Image (cartoon, rainbow, N blue to C red):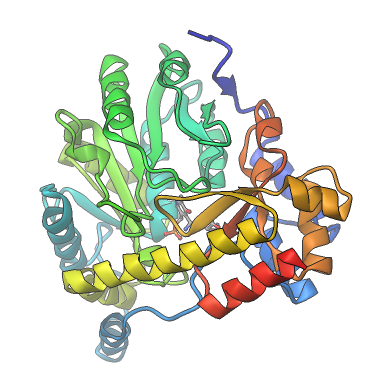
Length: 407
Ligand code: PMP
Ligand code: GLN
């Protein structure tokens, strides 16, 4: 086993990053929150096609919009209970049963949150104390690093190595230690599009049991799966009792701006999340929770069509990137494709994906997210020439983006 495999997250603290971030890629010099926001600003400034920040460019299902509008007009405009409106708690529990055979208690085993973001933050803040450690794969969604630091804890990351991005289970085991308190598993995985197989899931469960950790799973892309159904880690033997499962309306129902998400699991864990969440935001927007409840109850055909639609868009972008000289890794989930853009770097005379981002925006009119921005300082170089592109966009835009990249 390689003990050096798991490196601590050594980048700057979030507030320091904020002070620096604005100038990192855009030279804009203003305060910047996240790389996603920064890339959207770059796209807006240059008029480029924004395949950076992941958000759909269509509205969600009409049933969902109608239910929210009816709630808004029908007096559903005051605080909801901290754990959410009972209709949404029920709908989440039903959804977990319908798709996965999981049976969280609707009242005590489901908490509605302000997006998956708050679900993740509340789950981490509920269980972390200063000096604790959290294990996750990298590259990873940026929020994990920031919230772990807010808690005074330390993120220990295990790299998914290009070009296959498959986890090394010995390195994963080596990342656990006496201070490990939480494991975060993002499946399907942003940014790589990897889906973890049963061997990985059961190893995570085994390691979590051995070290008595809470597992927080980030499953916001659960319904964007290609060539197979999603399998939540909580369905593995012995897993449910130590797992908090997090998801949201954002990706499944094209409503990233609604900021409605949820955490489900056993009462003894979900209760701590609810207690923490009460002092973050109290509760999520009431009418939108009612819209989300209607959305979750859509028939299976909605979910099947969604996955098929995204699979077709994935193929358009993967083929387009390959035709443009990049080397894409075909994702099995999410609406992201990562690609080795070495050839594009050479064509544009720059050294890596971070330098390429503003150049591509200006010259080709396309924005992607440099993968090094989602990696720790220790492993950033592994992803130097990798860039993430989102296919959560209209097909004609994806085709146009690919042509621009090739030109
Ligand atoms: N986790 C991952 C992996 C994500 O990509 C995102 C961004 N959508 C989130 C969490 C946050 O989700 P939400 O918008 O529901 O807060
Ligand atoms: N989840 C989206 C992404 O990875 C963006 C979310 C955000 O802007 N924080 O691109």
